[in-house]
Image 1 (cartoon, each protein chain N blue to C red):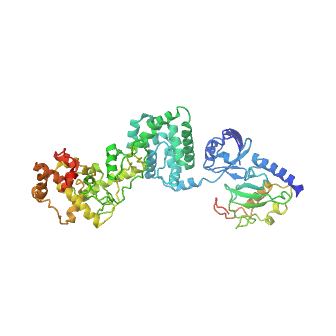
Image 2 (cartoon, chains in turn red, yellow; image 1 turned 30 degrees about the vertical axis):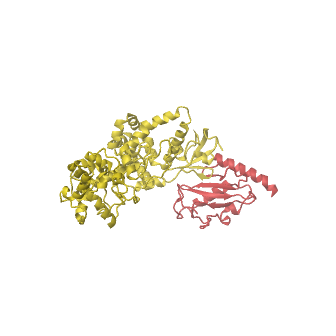
Length: 140
Length: 473
């Protein structure tokens, strides 16, 4: 654990900077939910609904929690905005790790952004893009 | 976190198209204001614009610095669905009543002090967001015309050219309309305004400036809303007298509670114990807790009462519109400016209750009045200070007739010489030999010798110089 401690913070700091500077494809955004949290455990994420799907013009908010074993262990991911997706628990909004490839095959080189991008890909895939969705603004 | 007054340069990254840099002060802008500034750089209207930073969607009403945006950071600009407010707005049919509402809202306070009044803010916002109203209000000329259509406003502007200048300033009108459209923005502006005013006071000479502002803007505005029934010193004194309130000694803080004008009056109107109390006509009756045939009926304001006995119906009708206008403006009725007397305006709508006891008592009071009604000089008597209850009020006359209870002490139909035979005799024994004057005074006093000695009545009938009437009896 001690071994992973420093890399954890380095990695998260790097991700934080990437998130704040908006480096990436611009469809996902993420940052610390509390800027003064030195452990950098709680993160917010947003996914902009992919165009051409039922999610177009919607913005989904998520919560990500990086425990002390990050990045060896994947973070836990919850949707705040209500969404109808097979990989999302419809009662809690939790993204089931077993049903999202990025989480089930987690590598320590993966990042928070990878999770968000993977989720967005999931929204846009042919099976899910027409799924009826709860009204925008509703939350878990 | 960040210096609250520093301007930072932030990258904005739309989901499609090129990003751009924009500099602003996050401590001075709400998200909504920022969006409105960004409209120039993007094709997304402010209503549809979503700003996403650091995994969060920025809320319109928040200040930008709440999100900790720093120099060189990136905010994503996303086109979202239209705001909920504007979705609602498109369902609202812009009618002439909508315009009227705006008109009245602006008229209440064109300076954004409280553009909503008692208005439902949501309703207001959705209305302001409807395309037609927006179009209308985007033209400052139309707004100006609307404001000027209100007679109160026009009058005020004619009297105060400074205010007229403000109304003529299109950017001001636009700003006001923006504020009316967005309650958050308005709250924010009001907050800034308050802070600015508070700071102003600490600057040397700032207080004088404040005072000047008050005199040129606030005061005319408030007095315009007051509907001409300003409280005068005399009116306040009468009210204070009626409520048994005393002027506190000079230089002391008035910490006595304001009297409740609706509370039942306990001081007994017994002439033999306190002749001064006869000015309080209501005896044990609460002056406003009187009974009326209809619970909705309102007293006609003093100016509309006429001495001629109209039918109850007619005067009722004539009084109703008047009291409505008074109601409409009453929220803006600031307390009067007399210093030491309770600033209670006589209520226009009086609570009514049917109570046989108070009917009986009122009748006695009425009786006293009726007997003296033939003398025009009665108008100057203290009783007429309460025009609601004086004989000018046709309700009372009618009511008394309809009640038709036998009158015990004196029949008004009898000539006063016969009615007051006893009292006159007594007065003559005391040396008041002028019988005509005595009759007149007795009539005014309702046949009561003690009341006769009330100072006002004495003055009335020429016996100004009698000393200490209470000692005689």
